[in-house]
Length: 86
Image (cartoon, rainbow, N blue to C red):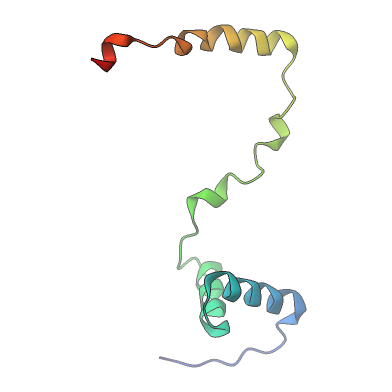
């Protein structure tokens, strides 16, 4: 394995590395390598992270008429088909 010395990380990046290490219960080195791999596109991030707050702009954005229309369209899905459970 190769070694690399990196200087000038700054307090914000150092803090992020420390938080990741604490969260994962790993060393600072392992956390730093994980962040470097992510940043280089060599490690995929969890799909759960992709939604986050990206849908927040839709909260409360429907008019009453749009909400009523959606309720009517989805009402069918509230009925349980007992035959499917036999």
